[in-house]
Image (cartoon, rainbow, N blue to C red; front, top):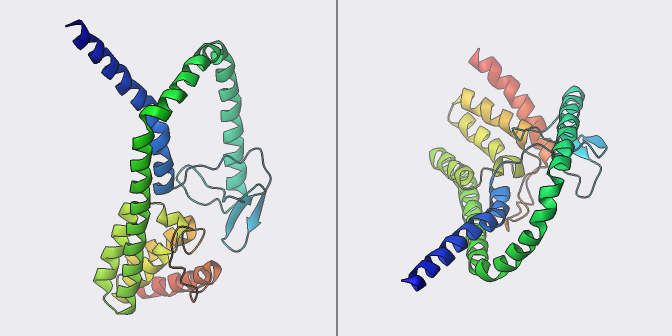
Length: 244
């Protein structure tokens, strides 16, 4: 009876530990899959990158500056507004952390123990999640490539279906690829002007590159991002005329 209670307590604490440390591991996949959030750029200078029509930071990797919705920051006044808001948030966070400092000091030994426990308990989960992430990226690429092939074969409905599947698997494709450019062209090919304009807008507002880093298919013969952006802007004007 006593042994049963001890086992129950151990299982309960194990479950709580997994919940605490599992979030950190899963967040790696979540970060890859989801659209990027606001860029914390208040400590760095920025510059306007004409090749993607948006601001970048002058730091390692030169990340694109984005708002809370994941949209690229493309106007100077918007950059200033977001920067001021984040500075105010930073000051508030510093004050909050100062108040919590005694609790943090007490918690540090517990955090160290949890780190050791994670190495033993969560190792198989890390392996499983790594396999899942690899498979997710592969399936996303398959869907994107299938969409491109269907487009080339003029099977436009099938192309749209594959693009939607790719975005469902990996919403971050909106920012990491030119998928909305191809969605726009596909909608345009079947006469859906409104959907085409919206897809083109998404391409300009969110995308920062043509192909994700993890794709094995590089489509080297494709035009550059800025060339596609110029084409999109011209197409949007012509579609407006047709719709009116």
